Image 1 (cartoon, rainbow, N blue to C red):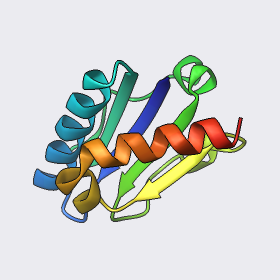
Image 2 (tube, rainbow, N blue to C red):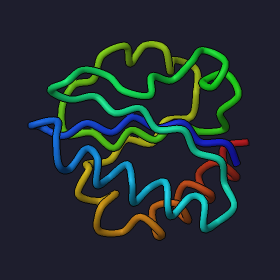
Image 3 (tube, one colour):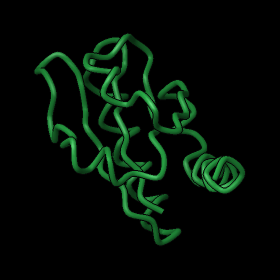
Length: 105
């Protein structure tokens, strides 16, 4: 499965990067490709390309705040959760995303 993700917490520092790291580890463990954009106090990093978004099977938004450019995901399967969930249960989250991606195919 090909996943694109945006992580953004209220402050845009710690939880943003912890969530991104946990999601990356969990996705790779299950054999999935994942690209993660972070949005925070220093702006956007690893910005997702239009091609990456088009090729994605699902979009995972691990966010606690409004993110910029959310409209670029219109028409895609989107799962939106708080960053805490990505940090505390990344493996279960990836399993749930697998179910969602399969059921909405």
